[in-house]
Image 1 (cartoon, rainbow, N blue to C red):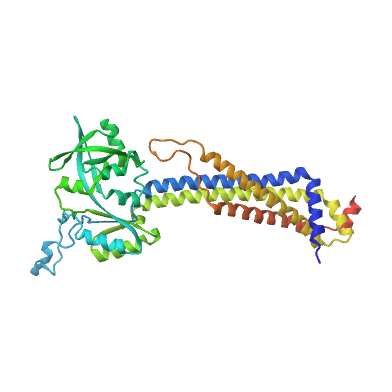
Image 2 (cartoon, helix red, strand yellow):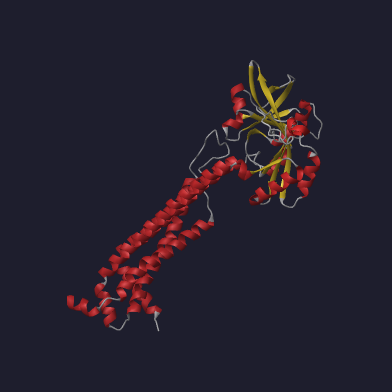
Length: 420
């Protein structure tokens, strides 16, 4: 029967007598795990920031009327020619309204759906922004302000003013930051908007909106849905878009297909709208984890080399242990115990070191006009990374210790003693 008290006592003595080698092996684990925690926390935090920058601008499902070419041409309806092969060139899109038919009943249906977290109506209009002699083309989006605040990050992107100010002002506008800079406008100023038909309406700037995407901030602004309906001369049920947020984003694709089939309007899910971005995000994550795993493997090889050298240095001790009655298995347990002790000590120190470095990075100022809500470098303190780190430290030290320990088990003490 194995006497673990004696084995652990001998393992402790070996580690303390060769303190320099023990510290070196432990530091190998510490810096390997510390570098892994720091890298994966920073890289995944950065990836999440980039993902959120794009995905927060995109609803889980976007419903709208799409402009499509006519599926059937008038010539196909002529009976004498119905069996002939018709060639029609330069097919023009069919006349279709941008308004969503029965938009209000659809919204009521969506809000009662258990899979839907919320649905917001929108009205989009192409306009011209006029300030003095400056005239810029862009889009004006009518929204249900407080519902947008609940379902999106629009509040975080308002760098001046507030959503409540827009809600309480029927002639208010959240002006895109790019437009505000180009026209030298700020909160409290007025800007005129002109429709394609030529009608001009003055609006008061109650806030500045900055999404972080220049192509959006240079053309897009927000106003109340009722205000834009009034500008366009439309009824209160005139809605061109419905944005949907789901409780589970993974169900976006099947639900979008179901809604498109049910209501006969285009429903684009977030995966379809951001297919290229998702590919880039996946590649970044693969690179992050590949580099992180490489760091852990390198640390494991370092541990193996140090333990291997430790066994060669302890040849006489191994011979004496076997000569005094210790079995080969007992000797193997002694050196594997040393490896596991090094793994536990180095792994815990590595987690602490990784957390300290992550905290330091998290406190470094990161200010850019493109990302007004980000003040420091993004770091992801996900608990699973620390679990993976300590688990890998134990596994790698176990494997790194098993191979040299197995070699020590087979050492012939008589040959070592005679050799000396």
